[in-house]
Image 1 (cartoon, helix red, strand yellow):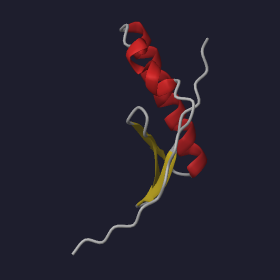
Image 2 (cartoon, helix red, strand yellow):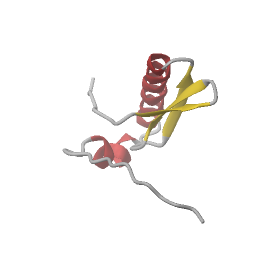
Image 3 (tube, rainbow, N blue to C red):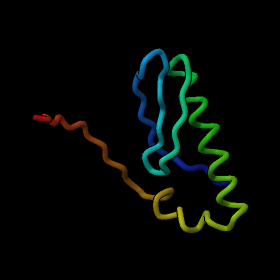
Image 4 (cartoon, rainbow, N blue to C red):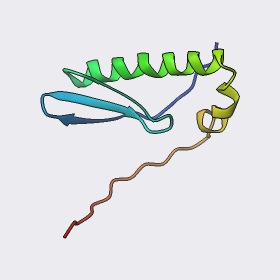
Length: 79
């Protein structure tokens, strides 16, 4: 069993919390931040299990094993 450390982002959208793993493009949601994170973790695990079954996990290895990740918040203005 291999353990990966990935990024999760959360935001509130309407009455739900949306969670997303930017490395894989997998997203989920929940009524609370904790529920959204739990749902995301399950979705990512299923995504990776499926990728492994299809023989695609090796294609994701550079993303999954990157030694450092960086994130930042930006502000944009739309005219």
